[in-house]
Image (tube, rainbow, N blue to C red):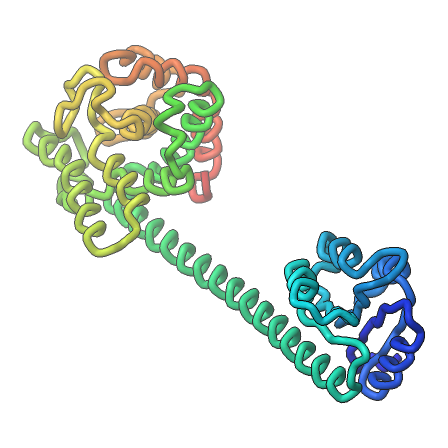
Length: 365
């Protein structure tokens, strides 16, 4: 067998047809003849041809039964099949074509016509495969480009978040830790079925990415305030509180210039509402209870926890136990009571992250 040639199976119970077909095609293709549909199906288990010439009227299995079997098997479904038949009525042709045949050739056939019809169909099949390969490669290229763009966006996002952190340099890895804490709380929410209707619509990857921008509004706060070595005055604290509205405005401005709305909406909510309190005493809008978006209520807990266990110019870091006690005391006043109970269940995981960070302050949390 010439490996550079296309392979054709010719199936017919008439020896004359098989002989004429083989004599006609042998100079151009690898030709294998068989006298029944049953034998063809057996051979197809081991070898796949480029094209099949299939007689319609055979005693053991007729051509229609054979093609149904071939097309039902994913390994053989794409083999092009040309029916050979002595019938020339339109109804028979329509039945064969509807079952997946690509053409009909009437017996007895003209050898030159058989050659030309096979040549045309093999060319079409070759072009179809090339198009499929092209589309597959194009899809892979698009996926690669999309992945590259997403990686670039994530890098820009991370750099932007770190820029805020470097300006507010007392926080040290605050952004990364809060992102990790948020993942723990959301995972616990899902497992326990709390607020299921709301979180079922979230894109969790985008939600966790958006947490990085919760303090983005600090870009608009003076270094003299952010990096002050001591407690803030009332006026300075009022200025710091504005980072929530500044962050919201920054994100809204970005939303006007892009079609990517989901991620930015999560980021806007986090930036604007993570300092709201359950009893309505928070800022910037004094929202109360479930009027505060769930994402903001979650972020409030992880943000406060990390602030408590971190050193500040005006205080030493609290221990994990002390931070847990503060959050527990804020149940139903500062924090959503359901989320406080959830936090208490998973607080040890928060401590693990904090301890890893203390052990490796320059690395990832």
